[in-house]
Length: 247
Ligand code: PXP
Image (cartoon, rainbow, N blue to C red):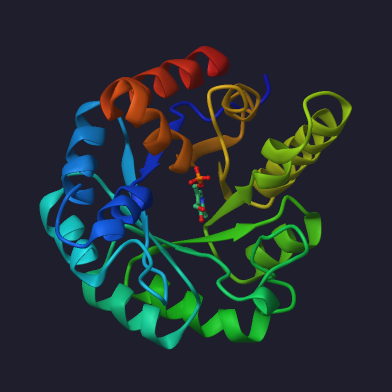
């Protein structure tokens, strides 16, 4: 029997609710209200990225998300001293290290954990010591996975951007194969496998069907779709699409 991670979790990224709010300033639409609605619609967790330039999520959003939502918070952060201090202050359930500068990323946009090993090791250790589950957002490449395991991160999030952006057909199939191989390899190393970036109703099924994947993080498409059908229905349909693919 092949390994199948039983419950495929859906993390809803609410960054772009804050993007719309910030377009005008003020408090509407409120990302915390979106997080509460996402919980009602079947999200298993909420993801938010506090960027160095605060272009969407603000410090006060992180404070309110940790205090007011009943779901685990996945705090996406650059590997900087400033973000580490904020994570240690709020102690989210999980912290996902993501690249913010060009030199921190691989050609495919994931965090370069091979090149950044010395810089990342102490940050990962401090987050882990604080009881925060560390995840590394990486390209689906063996060397990156091997180094993630050596760095002691319990989780990796595989970057699905190249798969989602590839034209449907042979190119996308090749990217999916890379994802499948990386998920199996990472699982073999003892890593919990998450995936995300760019997923929509069309692309989510094949990734949800990868048996080692335990969690998908999805934001931009769901917030965009919410304009047409509402956030609850968009999330419910995503959940059903994931469930159907996993079954
Ligand atoms: N996972 C990570 C690590 C991300 O940084 C993001 C946001 O870019 C996502 C998932 C969600 O991507 P999207 O908003 O394209 O669904």
